[in-house]
Length: 565
Image (cartoon, rainbow, N blue to C red; front, side, top):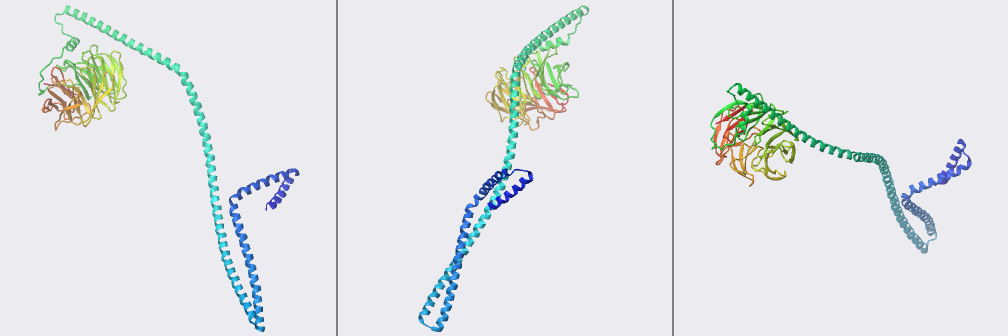
């Protein structure tokens, strides 16, 4: 077969060479190359089937040998049968026992030969069946081989696509490495500039602090000059008239200078005075100063208003907030007021000049609470961003930031100024070290709903009063981490998330406003409700404040402030 293929190939290549003008001496080389390749391919494709071919060839040879043996036996049987016939004919003519014996022996031999022939046929059938089985195996192997070839072909295609992807990824990686190197070089180049900018920023901050100090000095000088001018004006008016009325600033200074006075607190019975504190705006916050002579309110109209607590006449309006004022407070030394608003800022005003001293920014969300430390040197604030910030009021900068796990609704600093106690949306009370800002303890299980307010209880230096949306008040000892007493009533409902409760200066009574406009007063020692002041407020009460001069004030959501007696 190979010789025939070789001859055909030689002839074809010779024809092509003549057709294309190729010289004769190049044909043998090409022929030899093609023959070598055909032999290699033949060897490669024949190698998986060599064992099967050898087995099949062996079986075919054995089959041919058996068929030859069978033909020889058949021929011998024919010869012997003919001899037997002749013997029978001869025995019929001549007779004789010896020939009959010979016929019998030949008959026996013929029988044996037939049996052997039958055995040979049976063996041939078995061998034929084996050949068929081997052919079936060969066919199956051929099919498996085709499937494997298809699988190998698909895997090669996948390998090619994977190699293409790898090349693309390597190219992308190379680009990324080059970009990373370029950015690293850029970062190294910018580091000196960053250091320079940080140094300049530090210098600018120091310069800003100096300018703030200079501005504060100038404001003080201006205020002193204004006071001198006012004094000269009053002296000039005194020369012309003997009846000189006191100015509003003198009234404020006189009231701010008043020292706190201790009273034996009485149970409020009725409304003494009412006033529309903020028209057409919801009120959110209320606070007394340390002497109880002044009141401060904060509202949705973005203002804080200062009131004379005895006459409820408005003394000043503090403006500057961009959104609703949520909390207000007086400093204990009577020099400052602050307001925390929904624009993420706390603003500090001078009570004397009514001017903004600092705008404290840094919160990332609405601020719900703010206040002063007992020494009036620092302020604190907390809000929805789960942060409590401590502020240095001399520099107007944040001194510490405390991260909480829940929104802070209210907070208070203990009388010695060492601990911050905060209440949160997750129903818990947390204690923090004021000096380091580190977490000290968490009190849980006292309330089952968000806590809306906290204040120091005057009846015990280590106790706080809390109000909650679970419609209960609680007295808790923050040194022993335990609840001392809870206060509830079937008709009391806490209506807002910033509802502030309060305690009388002697610690005898507790007061909180309900969603129906009533003021609920409990007796602190026994926990009994002793008074429910109704039919004055027309909407939910959001804050109560009990001053050191035994004055109880309350505000409702819809505009009105009430003084009780």
